Each structure stands twice: as structure tokens, then as C-alpha cells.
Image (tube, rainbow, N blue to C red; front, top):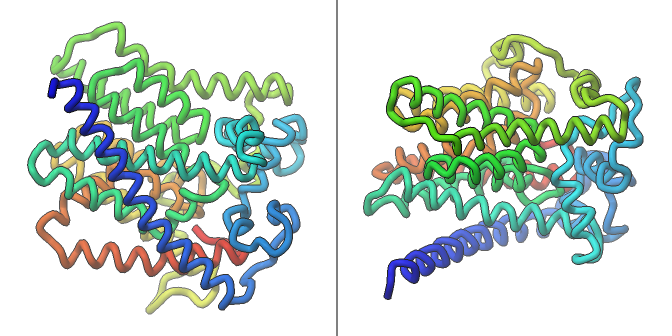
Length: 391
């Protein structure tokens, strides 16, 4: 068997492993949700625009809640409905809803297409997490490390978003693939994939800054020599330019996405400000009010991931990895709220790879992470399907 055949066999094996892991953990979650929908009444008020699959389809409609309606609006209307005096879909990036729209005829509806995109992209993302694990930890235990990392992602309390009509799965795929090719020094490929990430979520900016910092430090320390292919990384912010051109064409204002975030209670502050405000609500236990309790949990989530990023830097892991984690925490915090921190940290895959490494010889910690995460995942996923805010 020649080298090419061996590589193809390994690639197929890794993809099959990623697919199998996803199916096993997702079937367990879906079975829980299906049973829970028949045992627990609605927690929140289900809005009519969320019932996209029609009445009596609680399970499928359960993947279409809250921000999914904004993505639906982009898929159906583009950004033409923008009004500067009210909340608008211009705050939501175009890649995911446009894929759902144009793949809709293939799968029967844009809603079904969106769910296929999210789940298929997550399988691809797990594939690249496993490839990154093999690249970062090239020893006999690399497969176990990447498997644990993938498991931690799939049981993370907010991982149900990877299967919902949301951007998390698609962004996770683009960013993990971009990181992999960056570490392989295939900068143009990394830049193209990063541009797609930028067109999917604002977090693409963090990805660009992390990769640019890594490359800039290596060039400054003369650990590598400049090559024109490195300029391929500038394709990532070009994705933002494309989004702005779309907004210019459809709304007349290329900066509309920046102006509408105030309607979501976001403003520029120091990143520690919302964390301190949330922790003030923490007493002998969690606050009684659900919203306050969620704020405290989001603040702790931000702190944990920030510390992981610092620890990765201390251990001299590649700069791009820890910079993505730290930046992925600081950027959303700098908008004045800890809200949705569970979703922002979900896609910080380098942190999970680090956890996979750290639990290599700590089975008790491994079980604690899996069981503890799965417990909150069960609660959050069912709350989400029952029309309550989660994550």
C-alpha cells in the first residue's frame, strides 16, 4: 500500500470516527429530549414564528427557537427589512441563512436544510478537532486526547446549539478547519476557510487576530521566514468586507450591523465589568431568579475559559490556540454582558483539546466533566425546546 493510500485510509477512518461519535452522543440527547417533551409542559411562551414545521411537531420545532427566527428572516428577506430605530436581522451574519435558503429545495424547506447544515458541519468540525489532536499531540495517546476533547464538546451544556437552526455548528467547522490548515502552514486555505467563518459569525474576527498574532510573533522572533502565501490570512477580514458590501447594497448602510446591537443591550465596556456585575448576585448559593442565576453561571463560565487560555499560554501551546480562547472570552464580554457566554465558549475548541490532554491520566476528572456537562446539557436542551431561554 503506497503512502497516498495510507493517508486516504486514515482520513476515512478519522471521518468515520467523528461521524460515529456525533451520532452516538446526539441520539442519546435526542432520545432524552423526545421523552422530556412528553413529560414536561412548556416552560416559556412559544411564539408562532418558531413553529416552522407546523403544529404537533414539538421535537422538530424545538430546534427553532429565539435567534433562529432572525436567521429565518435573513433567509427569506435578506436585510431589506432593516430599520435603524428597532431591532433588526442585520446583526446576524449571512453565511448560514443563505446556505439554508439555497439548499432548501434540496431538502424540502430552508428549515430542514438549516438543520442538515448545522449537524453535517458539526461532524466536519469534530473531524478537524481529531485532526488537530493528532497534529498537536503526535504520540500514541493523541487519539484518546482528541476523542475526549470531542466528547467534552458534544456534552457541553450548550452543545444542543450545534444541532439547532443556529450558526454554532457551521462556525465551529470553518474555524476548526482554518486553524488546522494554519498550523499546517497552508495559509491561503486557512484564509479562505477563515473568511467563511467571518461570514458566519462576528467571532471570525477573533480567529483572524489569533492567527495573525501567532504568525506575527513567529516572524518577529525569526522562527519562520516571510512568504507571500502568508498574506492569505487577510482573506479572513475580507469576509467582513463582503458582509458590509451586502449591507450597503440591501440597506444603504455598511455599518448597520454595528448600530443595531444596542437593541440587544450591548455596549462597549471593559471585559471585566459584566463579570463583576454578575458575580455580585452570587451569595451563599445561586440567586432565586432564573435570569440572575444564569448570569452567575455565565460569569463563571467566562472565568473558567479565560483561565484555561492563560494556562495554555503558560504551557507554551501554539499562540493561535490560546489567543483564540482568550479572545473568544474577552470580545463578547467587552459588549457589556455575560449573556450567551455558554454559546461563545462552546466553539472555543482549543480549550477542549487542552482539557482532553489534561484528563489523559485523570479518569475521575474526565468522568466529572462528562457527567457534570451532560447534566446541564439535559436541562438546557429541554428548556430550549420548551421555549425558555437557555445558553
